[in-house]
Every structure is written in structure tokens, then in C-alpha cells.
Image (cartoon, rainbow, N blue to C red; front, top):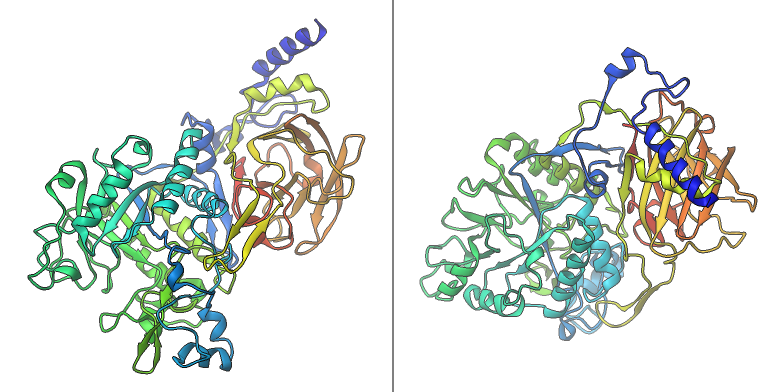
Length: 615
């Protein structure tokens, strides 16, 4: 009876407290403070609230800010490959062009077609992906791809079927993964296919393999009602490279036209520019805009009109080539080419409704013989390739963060003013007070089920990737503050593991107050040194991942929920100025390396991203 009575009292107090704003000393707010902030009337659910409040700063100091709302009629997709590890007869080992080019011996091997050289006719990686030379049947990788691309706010993945090869197993794994998180409530990217070689036959096979049932109907990209597909019709007349002559007859069938929303395959050297064409790349600058569909291509790098070989290393094919100034920059990892193509989108915004980014994860090219040695077509090394996915090399996560920042600028509206975040007092030492969290305004969602063990072969089946850092899978976060404390509520999929007495990476919170650079922008970390009596550490960065004591916080674990009360004074904050960016992490293997937040343990949100509170 006492517990029931306590629960009722707590709920009533929560109702009375919710909605109070401004400093909680006396519960009053000055008129000037009211003018500075406004009530959030958007009515966002936690999924949309989380997306709008994502933010981050990349390794070069470039910002991705929280956003306010969606712009009508704007969509972005990305060219997506499912071929890694699917050509066993052409992939007997891992050959990394970037690594080979780093030594004279490796360069000689790469360009040799004699014994001792890398084999002709086999796939070579342009560099090492952050997730290793992975196989696309690795569910651990696909989970992270879906989380990363959902965080970007992408609308669709354009699956590469241009070579008339379908990859049923990894495609179904991708579709199943998208469906799983879609059912959780996340706005995951939808799926469409791009066909070119043997277009009609390929489109029919795609329909038979994937579209005949309604299983995946929730994840088809169908902005106009019918699932979209790119292919070649009788009207092509040279828009595709396949139809330059008169002998091509493998057109999209009448049955497929009836089922699909068909867009014409528009090749960069096409002899006819279709207004309704769908380009995967443009070889001109500014890029060709297909006004009928409002579609434009944005590529990380591209071939030149003279050659399709990235290994030729033409200046204008480099990631570092700025098309606006016609200058090739040596620091290509800053993405000057990518940004100049995005700038076309912003300059022509009124005519553009759909952007296809090329690409996410192609990573490989076949070694061919050329006049001056080895020849590689669609990728070469870290500078001459076109993937946004994170690299273990010099590119790091720059292109992922650049993608996210530009997608948000194109698809969303910026925040004009800070919102009035209601204040509340919560006694974290009392389990009955958990009911008060039901009335908290700031609620964030994280993927549930992506924190899994990794155990899968690489792309050439010559090694196995394993990772067993999965431990606590964060699903929900809530944040609120009052005059004294900043409160965090963190829920996990299963009961939180018991603290083992030594780990410094158990259920941490990284906080940025914007007052110093600290560790990758985070100036405080909570809970590296919890104590048995319910007290835990608050530490301030003394530079990088080096921490010094800044105070103590209260915490409690209740099954699959952990709650914290962090004194505002220890963070240098006040009730009137309580604006932070934060992330919740668990069991990050290398917490001093920001790229490891994409890889190990749990990071909510993933990688370099943070959630915004109080802004």
C-alpha cells in the first residue's frame, strides 16, 4: 500500500511540475527569458525528436547542427553496393591498393602481371573500410550501416544492379534489417534498384526475387505510390551507354512498367538527357539537373569524360578537386569535390527535389591491364574513390559527417531559437520516482538489437572478424534538469550488467558544454569511477582523453534502467544556461579513439554524433 501511495503522489507531483520553465529558484521566469525561448509545439515522437536533435563536429571542426523540421518535397538517396565478398572466384585474397602504393615493392606488385604481382581479373580494395574488408553477409556490418544511414536522414538506398548481377542473400539480409528497425519506429531508408546492363531481364528478376510478395512493402522507395526502379526503356535513344547503337533490345517489360515507377537510366556520357532521367553520376560541372524529375547526382569523386579509369588519377577525378575554383587540393580528405557538387544543389535548390549521392560502399575494382600498368575503373585508392563510408585510413569519418551535414541542410530547416525545456526534480535514489520520467519532455531513441557479437568471415574468406564487446544495448534516454541537477535516464534492452569494480567504460555519459575542446568536443565524462554507495565520478577533460576530478554525481540501477543526478555546478552550468550535447556509451574498447565509437560496445548515438539538450 505504501508503494502504491508513493507512486500516486509521485505522479501527481510530476503533473504539477511539468511545464514549469526558466530557473527553478522560486519557480519564476523573467519576461526576458521567456522572450528568448519558446514552447516546442511540434508534437514530435521520440524517434523524430532524436533525429532533429542529432548533431556533431567532425575532425576538422565542421559542424552538423540540430534541425527544426522537414522541408516538403526534398529527398536524398545513396548508391549502395551489396557485392563485397560475393565473387569468390575473383576474390582469393585481400589486395589493398592504398597499402600497396605505400611502398615501392607494393607498387611494383600492383602494376605487375607476372608471377609475384597481384592477380589480374581479381577484385582489389581501394583502402581499408573502418569495419575491415567485410563481407556483405555480415549482419554486424549491416546493422551499423542501417543505423548510420538512418541517422543521416536518408530516404532511400539505390542498390547497384547495373551489371546485371543480383546478390540475393545480402540483399535479403539488408531488407530484413531495414524491416526490423522500421517496425521499431525508425524512419529507415527505403530501397530501390538501378539496372542498366540487360536492364529488362534484370528488372524482371528483381521483381521475381524481391517484389512478388508484400513482405518488404514497408521498405520499398515509392514516393509516387509505385516502387521506383531505374532501367532502360524503348525511349532511351542513347541515354544509357547500352543503347549507343541500335542493337539493344533488353528493355523494361510491360509487366514491370505496370508494377514499377520506372525512371530512365541516365549515363554520364549519355547522348540524350532525359528530363525524367535518373543519373548515378554527372561528368560535367555544374552537374546536369533533370528538371522533369527534379533529380541531380552528387558524387564524392567522378571519372573524367576522357576516361573511366580512376587509376589515371586525373586532377578533376580527385576527392580534393574543387570544381568551383578549379583547384586540386592536396588535403583531399576534406572533400572539396563532394562539397562543390553539394553547392550546386544549394544554388539550384528551387529546381531540385531529389539528390542521389554516389556512393556509400563500393570499395572494390577489378585489376585490368592498361597501357602503363594496372588499370582500375570505378575506384583506385583513398583519394580516387567515391565512398562515404568510414575508412580506417586518412579519410576516417570525414565523408560520413560531410554527407550527414549536407543532407540535413538540404532536407531540414534550421532552428531559429532555443526551446523552453520544462524543468523537474527527480529523486534518483527512490525507485518510485521512475514514474516521473513518463512526463519528461526530452526523450531520445536508439536502435534496439544492433549491439551484437560479431563473428563473420572477411570478403575473401581468408580471415574471420570477431568482436565480443557487446554488453548493454541502450534503447531509450531521457534528460531533464532543475535548479541544482541535470538528470539522465538510460534504459537498455535487457538488465544492465553489474559493475565489476574496475571498468572505466561501464555506462558512461560524455557531455559537451561547448566551453572547451576537451576530448573530441566533450569536456566532461560521467561514471568512469562508480562507487558502491550510489555515488559516481564527474570528470573534466584536461586535454584529449585525459580526465581530472570535477565532482560527484548520484546514480542508481533499477533492472534495465540506470539514472543519474549530476550537479550543474560540477559542469559549470546553471538552470538558466543548461545547454549540452551528450552521448551514452558502454564498453567502448578504445574510448580514447573517436572512431571506435562506430565499432565497439554501444554508443548512443553512434560514432561522433551527439544528442542535443536545452538548445
